[in-house]
Length: 228
Ligand code: CDP
Image: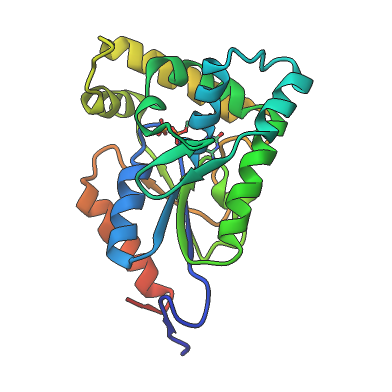
């Protein structure tokens, strides 16, 4: 039996996909801490691009205008912050205006290409935990472990509602409507729709605690003969 030492002789990349509120970012960042691996939140890049489009009043439906705009965006991030052209965007990407538009922006192929280039450079050379909608299907199709998290739409909206600091005065119904809207666009778009990779492990998190989910994933990692 070959036992791979984590952060040793081979790459170890975990792809975590799933719809909004399924627990991806909480689980991914906990696992990253536990395994001492970098965490990349791919959704934050789509959100930052969307915020830049809003702030600069870009007509994103005009592909020529959008293409030249995003070519000039320099996006940098670490596990807790993201900046666009040197400006910290961390506090302004999880707001209602971005929530409403991000799925439409993320469905556009030139936008996906820009994000895929950034993510691909990371995934080809280092251990990473990446979460999103197409990580296991498109970005890291050969990931060493793929997880697909899901939960009922009501539970996902409930979690999001309680996460909000709610300076924007959103009701549970507003949050639920936004999640349904994004689920529909994300799952039905032509380019890299939200879908479970055939070899991903699906976990329904509706009734599970965070510790339960982490335990299940850690068991999978051990069963793959990675020494933790
Ligand atoms: O955190 P939440 O699940 O609400 O969303 P997110 O991960 O921040 O992603 C925001 C949006 O970006 C999603 O609704 C998708 O439209 C898009 N996205 C995507 O298309 N592909 C990814 N790999 C990640 C996010």
